[in-house]
Each structure stands twice: as structure tokens, then as C-alpha cells.
Length: 302
Image (cartoon, rainbow, N blue to C red; front, side, top):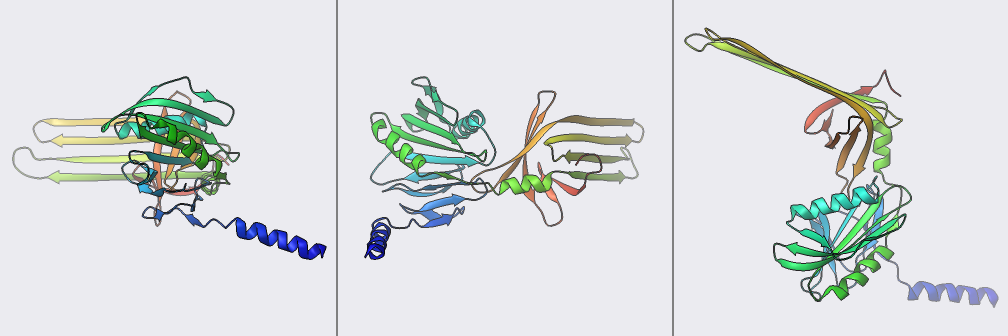
């Protein structure tokens, strides 16, 4: 009887708490209320709230949630694989700025070790509004940001909406962490050149150019980069000219992936400069900052 009673209790819990469908985020996907949307690249998943539908908005570069029951209310979700509260907040503000949304704090933000939240007056292309935003980090070093925008006077609905979505958030180890492990200890190099000659007549001459770059990403998180390009131009009767450009820096590196798995190589140079280079895999090379690099084990760093 005791076993039978235990089984009945478990069965009751099962049928009264239905399983939540989970799906991996796709750029063209549409997601209904109650669906758990997972981003393995950033290591974040969350549940679409009741009455809302969601899909990826290319212009906003975010998961956008809207509801016919909440006209004028829009919720955006961002996530990255390796970041902190300050960096995450800066990236979200930059995304909103691209949409023409300007924010003014309505009160000082509240922050602890893993969460930052705040209220803002939002000036948008469609008029003024109110924005409530929360950034939260997870133990694997990833983070999620949820921002909700509403017309003035309707801001009471957006805080519980954002807080409920965050309460459903689960953090896991981002698959982008494996990308970083694979890139560590590799030397990425590229080179190229071109030449052209126009014979005969006035203005005859030629041009030649060359370009070389090398990027070493060490497993300990340090990097070294050097670049050199040369151009030589010769015009008959007018002489010649030569131009050389070069750069070199070193520092710390890491790899960040967003909700859709789009990767960015972040370089923090010791001279104070920062570089954010998009990264994509090609068939036989790696596209770094829109240039094809070829990888080989580094002989100078592990």
C-alpha cells in the first residue's frame, strides 16, 4: 500500500505539472507560449511567457517577444557565452542605440554580484516610453539580459513579465567554450598580394602590393598579433611611390558567442586598445574580421 501510495503521488505530480517543450533556437523559428527556447552556444535557455510569441528580429539582433494582449509592449532577450555584468549591459545599450532608442535612468540601478536591474526613460523613434532591464550572469561565465519597453503609463506590466522570464532562465556550459579550447595554442596566418602593369603611352606604369598578418592565440588566454602591408606604384615619367603600413599588439583574448552562435573574437591589448572581430568557420580556413586565416599549431605558445 505504501508503494502504491507513493506511485500515485508521483503520478499526480507528473500530470499536474506538464512537461515544457524545449527547442533549440533557430533564426527563422517562431515560438509559442510555454516553450523553452535553448541557445547551446551561449549556454542559456528560458521559457516564453503566457500570451507572448517570440522570434528572432534581425534588425534588433535579439529574440523579440510581443503579444496582442499587450499592445505597445515589446520584450528583447540577449545572451552571450563569456561576459560580465558591465560588458553585457554595454552591449545591450549599443544594440538599443542602433535602433534609435536613447535611455535616461529614472533611478539609480540596483546591482549585486550576479544581477543588475534598472528603470529608464526611453526615447524611441515611435515616441517616449519606459524601459525596464535586467542583466544576470551564470556560473559558467555567461549572461542573459532581458529588456521590456512599454508606452508611458503602462510600465506596471513589464516588471513582472521580465522577472518571470528570468525566473525560468537556466544556465549551462556554453558550447562556445569548446571553440575557445580548440583555438588555444593555434597560429592563424594570412598573406596575399597583387600586381598590375599598364604598358605603352603616357601614364604607363605598374602597381604591386603585399599583405601579411599573423595571430597567435595561446591556451593561457594571451595573444600576439602582427600585420604588415606594402604598396609600390610606378608611373613612367613621374617617378614612383611606396607605402608601408604595420601594426603589432599583444594582450588577452577570449571568444564570445551570442544566442544564435555568432562568434566574436575579443582582443584586449596591453596598450589599451580593444578589438571585436567577427569569426566564422570556412571549409579550409577561418574567417576573422572578414579575412581568411589558415590555422596551424603554434610553435611559440601552448
